[in-house]
Image 1 (cartoon, rainbow, N blue to C red):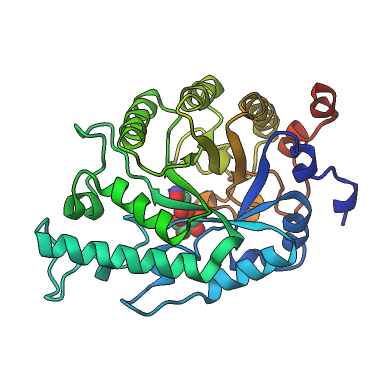
Image 2 (tube, rainbow, N blue to C red):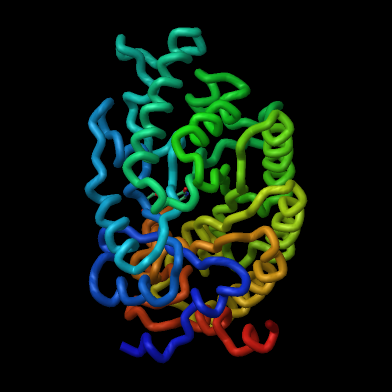
Length: 341
Ligand code: XIL
């Protein structure tokens, strides 16, 4: 493999922020694990720590897949970004059903039951992974700019009420006193979403919530303006908390359902320029930006090949199907970075 000749991303960005990557079980094979060990200092389980994996039935905790990821990371001296404690997707149906099999309501009894379940789930995660997890994503995708309180109407919000995030962060702090506690969301680079998210966060912080960092998923495309990404990082840099980029990829499709026979070479050049601009924006926000995590090791394993449509041409990451560095890799790991320091 040519890996030893490449600059290590982790080392190149060491003066600025940590570089992380999401991995799944299928990444824990030779070649992929070489890239993992070489370039990253933080590891996210792409799926294995989600509620549906961890507690598929009430009281039955399954850590096998997450443990496999954690063991490889530990062997590389890497810490974990815990994705995710509370979400409405990829969460088992039982979580939101009462003992009678009916959906939980906003009654006091149902609220108590759902808080008990949240406490048990969060405590199990925190106890099991301990200090290997440097940051816990306490909640994912909770903001909806069209709601008066800015909070998405998930079962969590509906049952627990308007102050539920404050309570969930209180529970998270109890079970994981040393972890960086994150509130994460998608499309935070869109102005309306950015403003709603900032309002939700300011309100939480004003009410004393233990939020240590804001998480930006950043599933971007070649037409997502990097100026908006910059505006987002700048806006959140004034809240007195840290920032993390949690799920970065840059789709090369022009439309969500575009289907091409192969990767157009010109798009990869555009993508390299895009990544270069993006990482330059990231570097300029290194005061509050702690970690930038790529959503996958190589194009061959990207979720965008299958979502939101089958698109076998998708190539949103830094390494190609043969695990070779793409122009995008060179766009962010070039000597220009070294000169700039
Ligand atoms: C995706 C994974 O990449 C896929 O493997 C899985 O099938 C679906 O979920 N936002 C999130 C991530 O917070 O958990 C999602 O991950 C991508 C969108």
